[in-house]
Every structure is written in structure tokens, then in C-alpha cells.
Image (cartoon, rainbow, N blue to C red; front, side, top):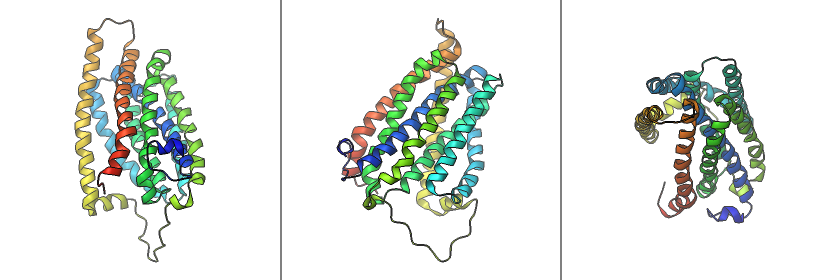
Length: 303
């Protein structure tokens, strides 16, 4: 409780649940930032920055196919069982990438597209789980503290990715991330039991006439809601700008390797560059998350 109260206005008994959820998110982001340099190492050495840009478009196609299936199966299991199923399935995918990579199969485009879907699903599922645990009032106070686990995990993951990319190959980093992702399920399994009753969400009353299940209900909901549609447009514009920036950065890294005299292989050079790059970006993100976000949520009138 004392640790959590340093960052947000917490109540007695809420600290343990917050720290369990934050530590799980920490491990999730460590895994993600071990994989991000691997993505760049594979795509830029095996294909190039142009193919990388086209692979970004394929991510959207893959997600469009996955989301209805994800929605369908999410209704069949309770929140913790579904969380375990999704993360275990993603870890199994990573183990398969490791085996195929070690067999010499070129996976750069497939892995790049898959990791884009991974980054979306792993965080969407995590925050969906958290939103099913806390009441609106408790969530508004505590989510900023939980999210510190994300920025801290991103920072630590990118920090260790730098030496690891020199000591280990990309496929060994994938295997390492697999075990880290599975470890993230341990603290989250105990989180629900450590949230005070008065901080938990009140279950919604059962409606007598429930709308029949639909694979496209999520899309229909977004199209009917001006708020969600505006949010979707924002995400499109944000990713448009982000994709152009990433393309320019990848071209710059390739140019730097060609111009620079180095004993490193191209794979190691790219891995180390992106590990450093993500480290400094995440360092700034950690400072903002830890000291500014919770203040903004409390002081500003955010709906």
C-alpha cells in the first residue's frame, strides 16, 4: 500500500493487487521488447526496409481476420481462463518460430506480421482483463500505477536486449521471450484474489433478451458509436504517421551500417541499434508515466 501510494491515491488493501498486475505487465513488456529488435534484425537483413513497409499493411489484414475469432472465443471462457489460453497460445507460437528458425527456414515477413498482431492482442487482452476486475472509480485511480509496469518493463526489456543481441542470435531471443511471457501468467493468476471487494467491478444485471452472438459485433459497435469511430480514426492516423516514421528510421539504420566501419554483423548491428533506440524512448516514457500521468488524471477533467 505504501509503495503504490507514492504514485496514486490508493486505499488500504489495494496495493498488493496493483503490484501483482503491474509485475505481470512488466514481464509482458519485457517479452515484447526482447522481440522488437528481433523483428528488425530479421526483416532488415533478410528482406529490407521496403518489404518491411508492405509487411505493416499485412498486419492489418491479419488482425481483421483474428478479431472476430478472438471475440467469439472470449465469450466461452471466464476472464482468467481466457487470459491463460491466449497467452499460452502466443507462447506456443513463439516456440514454433524458434524451432523453424533453427531449422533454417526464412521467417522474416511472417514473424514481422505476426508480431504486429501479437503486440495488439497481448495488450488488448491484458487491459480487458484489468477492466473486468476494477470498478470505474478504482480503475480511474489505480490504472496509472499499474501502467508503470508497462513502461518499466519496456525500459528493462530494451536495456537487456542490447547485450543479448550480441551474445545471442535472434532465435535465442525469441526462446527467451517465450519463457518471460509464460512467467507473466504467474502474478496475474493471484491478482483477482488480492483486490478488495469495494474496489471490484459490480457485475452487470442479466438482460432477459440478449443479442445473439455475432462474429462482427465489435465492428458494428464501433460503426454505431461516434466516440468509438472517432477513436478508430485517431488510431488510423496515428499508425499512418508511425509507419512512415518507422520506414524512414529503418532506411537510416541500413544506411548507417553501410557507412560505418564495424566488426559487428549486420544482424548484431541492427539489434543493438534498436535496443538502444527503444531504451531511450522507454526511459522518457517511464518518467512521464510515473510522475505526470497520474497527476494529469487527478487534476484535469478527463472523462
